[in-house]
Length: 117
Image 1 (tube, rainbow, N blue to C red):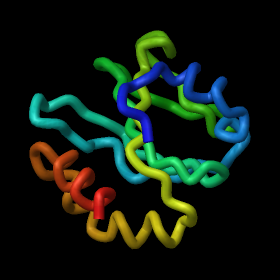
Image 2 (tube, rainbow, N blue to C red; image 1 turned 90 degrees about the vertical axis):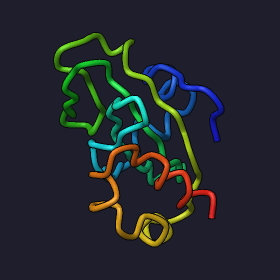
Image 3 (cartoon, helix red, strand yellow; image 1 turned 180 degrees about the vertical axis):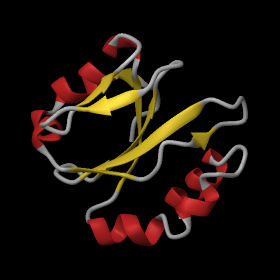
Image 4 (cartoon, helix red, strand yellow; image 1 turned 45 degrees about the vertical axis):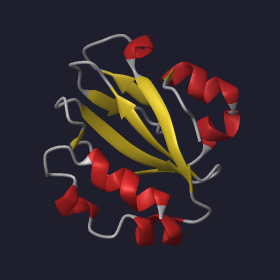
């Protein structure tokens, strides 16, 4: 698990399996106590559950499933790995109820509590 965010290109360059893997998104409206919005995704090949923060930009995906910023430079995207979960079923179990929890103010607190269990 990362202790500090890295830019998205560093994230993918550090392990090419990430770039080639299927990814599953679990919402893009997670918020911290300052109101910043995050997207939550899980990388199948590595088991990494990560948050991505894009400063005031919309995020899209290309034909290969890679993320890119529509209104800002890719270098501005920050990624923070918050857990490693070995299977899609494990992710689904840990995140049970995420659709509703994500919409609450400061929803990252709920998320962090779930992945620490």
